[in-house]
Length: 219
Image 1: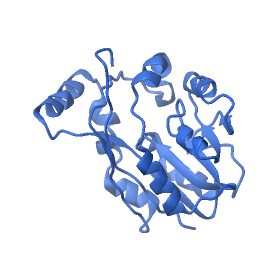
Image 2 (image 1 turned 135 degrees about the vertical axis):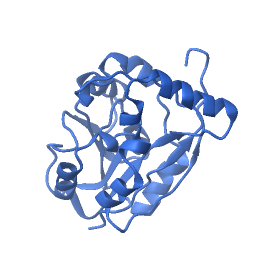
Image 3 (image 1 turned 90 degrees about the horizontal axis):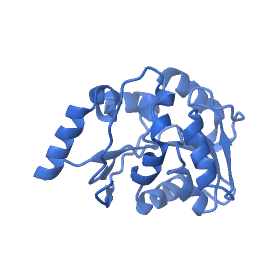
Image 4 (image 1 turned 30 degrees about the vertical axis):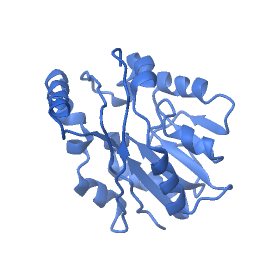
């Protein structure tokens, strides 16, 4: 089983978001779904094409987006003709995805990484966009191994703010200052490379893409 292909750093220029503290992470974005849909960054088309090329998907392949949120990562795979399961525990986020992806070839699943409810050996590609750092890794590893077909792949994606200009560095400072649990929920600190490699195993590939998000004043 190729439990190891990881796209675990996708860099972008701007992603502004505020956080509040709460114990149930599955409800974290319940009251911010509209803003999430409007302003959450997407992923580069080149990244999606690279994933498909590296994992040798064909028209019969099944994709599971775990922690799918509003379907930001599900959508480009649907666009390319794959059937997708969108697994999301948050009702508000899941409902938004069902509205946005209405009419496309997917199934919305009320589940989580540790218990997807998917059938054993049913998935060719598992993707997790900006979600892996929320998972219970031991339980998730068992669940992913259960649902993946032999030769299947796991791909982890994150957008990361660049801090290479004075503006972007100051933006990071502002976000950090005004977020009550930024260090705890920031994937850079909560899912460091050591944890990712321990989860995925040695056969892991890392690929970095430049991602640009344009925002208006409201964004």
